[in-house]
Length: 226
Length: 244
Image 1 (cartoon, rainbow over the protein chains, first blue to last red):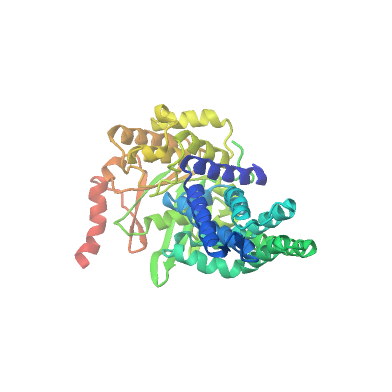
Image 2 (cartoon, each protein chain N blue to C red):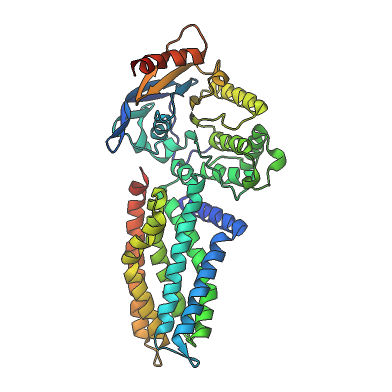
């Protein structure tokens, strides 16, 4: 079996389980939409949003709902110890990591498909004016966040206090991703759009992605071997 | 069957002075074992005797603190995916996805193991498990015994050379127990090395070639002699009990 087929096999299995339970999608979506609405009550006065609030709130919603999705995705593998079954299977461990990562990225993409228009509507943020750049920032930011999150969630799967430890470990490491995402999105939402700045932050995100995914692929096998 | 990562086979399993510590606690202390193709060996011992730890080490899920596990001429952790393709593990937890149906679980693992003719293989496995009529129902609605039968078929789906079965009789009814005994006999005839942990000593009487007893991390071979397996097992524990 090829490496790419193995990745897709793992991702497809995760999506099939999610299609049956809809547990992660509904909980993360509910959480993300609730966050955006609560922030909208706080930061929108008389129909006008506080400057630069939309970008920050969008990325906070993605980061928080992403943490929720990461925890549940691996909790599912822990319940019947299916992660052990995957670890003993004759598949390359990096393919297992990438399969789990792709599944989480696709789930977060589904959540973003709802909250990006919602943020745009509630904060009157022109997120679709430069749709390709927005899409690039979201894709690169989500991959960077999920790349670190997937590694940590897998590492913590046997830890008793994994629910507390995951955000404690994840947020400090992914701060560069969140900052780049917020600054890049913010550059697109200014009165005078700063395209060079948005492209610079996008390049930074792509750089973070390459570093984080490479490090995660390198460390996944040793950290998963007990 | 195409073995992912290349062909690797072995006909012996050799453990030499395998020790595993968790912090200051020594779970296994210089355990040695040699098994040949077609042998069925019972690993016996009281609760907490580290039987599952030993199976995890043999399954390459856990590295020994010291000592060596060899699969024929191959060293465990170094051999990687081609070796793992020849191992089948049934754990305490059943390693099946409750949201999926038996057919979907088996299809996923068959593809992971690179099994050829997946659908025929699934049909055979469901037939062995007696779950053909429930092939598309979610596993979450199954009883413990039904899940156990499915988990066993999942572990044996790819015809492993080494089957590691941790408490395989848990939750099985009389008919399923009988079927599993027959399955174990078939595995032995096919040249599979079977290591089995259980407390149902009467059930495995006659189907295991020999037994090892694990106590305080030390493995000793259960002597062959008169009496049932349980009588011999109890006799092997007596010196420890009387010395307390």
